[in-house]
Amino acid sequence: MPNPPVGQVVPNAPAPLVEPGPATDLGSTVGARGSTTSAGGNLMTYTVVEGDTFFDIAQRFDVPVQQFLHMNPSVPGLGEDIYINQVINLDWTTKR
Image 1 (cartoon, helix red, strand yellow):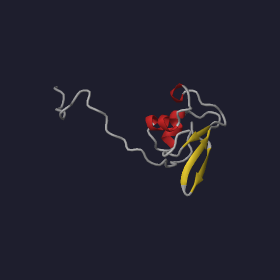
Image 2 (cartoon, rainbow, N blue to C red):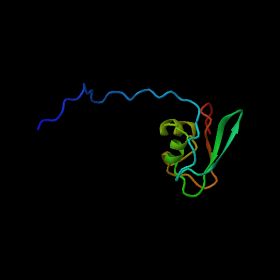
Image 3 (tube, rainbow, N blue to C red):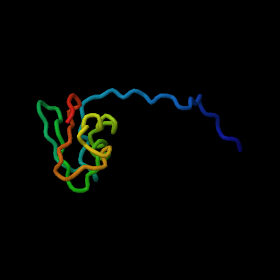
Image 4 (cartoon, rainbow, N blue to C red):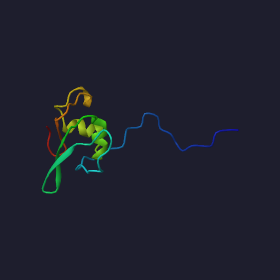
C-alpha cells in the first residue's frame, strides 16, 4: 500500500519567528516547582528548588528555551547547570 500524499515539504526551511513576550505561569509541575516574584502583575523571577530543570522551568512559563537562555545569560552550560536557590529571570525585557 503506498504512503498517503503529503503537502509541499521544504527541507531546511527557516524556523518560524518566535516573538519574545512576557512569561505566563502555567502552574507548578515536576521539574519546575519553585516560587516566583512579580511586580506590577508581571512575573519577574523564579527560585530554583531541588529537582528543577531549566527546560521544565521554561515550559512552565511558556517561554521558548532559546528565549529563556537569552534572558538568562548568566546560566552556564545551556541551562544544564542550575542549582538550588538560584534566581532565574522571567522578565523578558531584561537579562540577568
